[in-house]
Amino acid sequence: MDKKTIIGFVLIALVFIGFSWWNRPSEEQIRQQMIQDSIAQVNKEKAEKELADKAKSEKEKENDKIKEALKDTSALFHNALSGTDAPIVLKNSKVELTLGTKGGTVNKAVIKDFEDRENNKDLILFDKNDQQLKFMLAGKDININTADMYFTPSEQTDTTVTLTAQAANGKTLEMKYLLGKDYMLHMSIVAKGMEGLFPPTMNSVDIQWDERCKQQERGFTFENRYSTLTYKEKGGSTDYLNETKEYADEKIEEALDWVAFKNQFFSAVMISKDGFANNSLMTSLPQEKGSNYLKQYGAKVKTTFDPKGATPTELEFYFGPNDFRLLQAVEKQSTFGKDLDLERLVYLGWPLFRIINRWFTLYVFDWLTKLGLPMGIVLILITLLLKVITFPMVKKSYMSSAKMRVLKPKLDEATKQYDKPEDQMMKQQAMMQMYSRYGVSPLSGCLPMLIQMPIWIAMFNFVPNAIQLRRESFLWIDDLSTYDPIIEWGKNLWLIGDHLSLTCILFCIANVLYSWMTMRQQRDQMVGQQAEQMKMMQWMMYLMPVMFFFMFNDYSSGLNFYYFISLFFSAAIMWTLRKTTNDEKLLAILEARYKENKNNPKKQSGFAARLEQMQKQAEEMRRMREQQQKK
Image 1 (cartoon, rainbow, N blue to C red):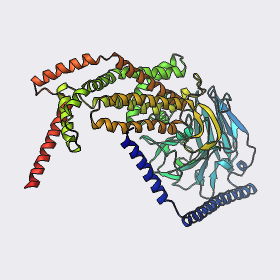
Image 2: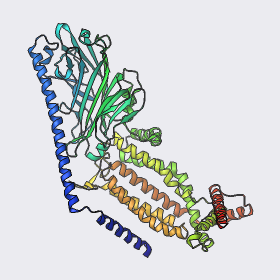
Image 3: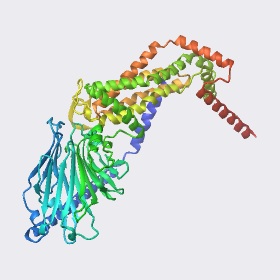
Image 4: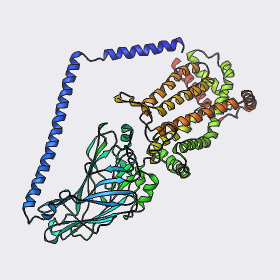
């Protein structure tokens, strides 16, 4: 750095320190802030206690009603309010679901052949302590809540069961379950002989579904980022609640086809044949690190119900992995005949990046995966393929930069008389004229970044959501779907976290080296004041990898590994092009083009010619304004 740059940095630091000192709160302000924080904490604890007391009071009232109904032998569901909660297991080769006779719903889901955090063979998506589903019917004299009722099983096999709650006078409420060959569970609710118990206009059932979403992966922060309550609007697109914000009974005005409690790689989805009515209420509350839970999810929805029992209430549940192709296949097993778009649970990015991932990355990834290659090799091959596809454009861009590099001495000579600040417009115009006559476009050097950025962002969305990388090892990496620590400590440090990820370090080092190469290439083609400005720019470029380290230290090692390999190949391509480019031959070609354009002034390169014309127009307008001001 030169003397002026050093002085600039020192002045910036002094201004920053002085501003921080000037805005430092006084002792009185600090004391007042502490008092306000204490009051806010007390109010928060008071509000939480009031909510807990309210929930406890409502639960006690509910228990009192049950006790009264147990005493009253004529109560509607007197026989169904007592019994033993016995487990009923439905299973196939992919999933094992445990239903309870109390409540009649699934209270445990085990996904087979997917390891959990403790390296157990099968993964528990949720159990009875973490999930509850209840159906509520508003009657004339009594409200029915299935969570309080005991059901009697019948017609039970490994994949089917009918659960019946007996009411007075032969009235029943039946729940029928059928487990498909994969991860789809079909459910129907049928009321028999109960039409007189409800108002004539009653045609819906309220559903309340709650779940504490388990942490399934090593990296809490990274997994939490991809854990969202997702839903699909009826006949429309999917949407989700922001993963970082707190939502309590957030109203969704549109009717819905399904609701999903999603974590990074697995989901529990509830689908309605007739759809969920407008104004559903959704809850998503992020949990604290160390709690072993990611989110507290909740959904209060309403769907159709026929008290006469002629038409059953039909629901389907998906308890399984977020695998794009699998979700497409499982959706076809649905009996509802709807376009569910369950594959949208695998987030592939905004529209442009989704198109890249949906119609390129996925097909290439599927093809390479079927070859049985290690996932690390798959990422390397995808990177190579992308480099091969973009190589012609990268080479064209590099050659444009090389042309500017070999022309630099001529530009320096042609513009040396424009050293004063007020001459910069004329200097730029002179440079544009030379570029135009030599057939060079000065913006073509930006093309590699423009080409690579959409691909980088597309892979940023694809890799963290690729369940195929989960528990896959490569070289020193134990799991490509999460970070690869070379050192860990128990305490969470600001910005860094509780570990150092080796692939993140390698990515950042590669980024520094690649930035050095690109900045050196650009510096070789800069003229006059541009070269001085580039010195300041290069320090900003070197600081960017440091920022990336704080951002990507928690990210998956697969993503960091991809970026590392991508930068490595980019650097190798740039180095090869530099070594194979003959500057003397290139300059000779440009000189011949210059002579051709000089003899034919109308023949100008597109962008440079247009830019030159614009600058001439701007200069002419400036002169006209000066003449008007003199008058």
